Amino acid sequence: MERLVIDVRALTDRGDPITGLTADDFKVTIDGAAARVETATWVGAGDVNPDLASPVPATPVAVDATPAAAHGRLIVFLFQKDFDSSRLRGLMRMLLKSREVLGSLTPADRVAIMSFDTHLKIWTDFTGDRERLDRILSHDLLLQRPPAVSASSAPSLVERLDPKSAQHTYGIERALELIGAALEPLPAAKSLVLIGYGFGRLGLSGVSMENNYGAARQALVDARTSVFSLDVTDADYHSLEAGLQIVSEQTGGFYAKTHLFPDIAMRQLAGALAGYYALFVEKADSPGAVHDIKTELTHRQGRVLALTSVSEHTP
Image (tube, rainbow, N blue to C red; front, side, top):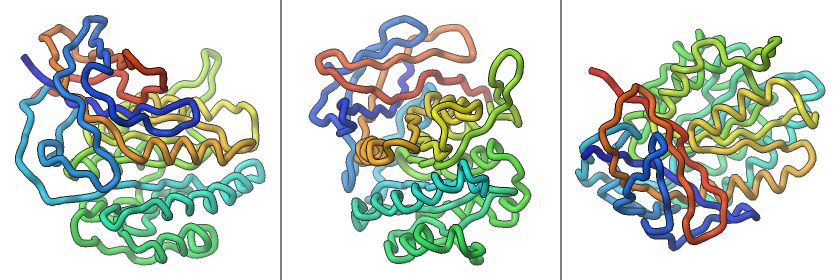
């Protein structure tokens, strides 16, 4: 019997994390068939479970329980920059709001900041230096050029994402793929906060994903990285929001508009970043390259954020 590790965030209607749950509080179905949840382990800010510290993709695996060094949360901020008036106001607003996350960091947490306009730009590798992070968010990202960035001591994102390669990344989908690939070897689940205006192409049949989005999605899933998309566009609806919605749903994150109630979006983000449950789930052998996953709460009311599908990896 193969097993999956599924990272799940459970939130109240207010956006607060639901803690204290056990395996019996979760129901998981794979391709419509019930799958037994063996364990549900809460991993919160500052918590480390050595059985979960090694990278375990959400694909059929033999679980690696090798102990690893203590670590905190790994959070990547990725800002889509655009100076169109319908986007710039929202971007400036969310740059300032993002500083609120810094106040919740523990000494073990690490944050990396990147931006994308004509190409991917790296502002800082993972760091716990709040003063440096605050300066980037409050001033540098809008008004300065990114500095030369060297790899930090472990954990490092830049070690696997060379700034020169980033300069030749001309689509947000490719940027997401590179970030996912760089995060994949790092331990446990990660969070990517995508603050932007979206992507995709609007056609007669609706919005379609392009620029090899599938590779980006797979890289993020393999890296156990959930995308939390905060839409900066000053509009009740726009076509490009579909890209933000899709990548968030498919990676176990969420999508939120910020033009009317940014504080609500930030509260939801704070709750999602606070921690997650790592579910060890039995997976029966079944045909097909892609398997649909549905995760629900059984004894509590709340919002569940988790992967919606996994792909079989072939050698």
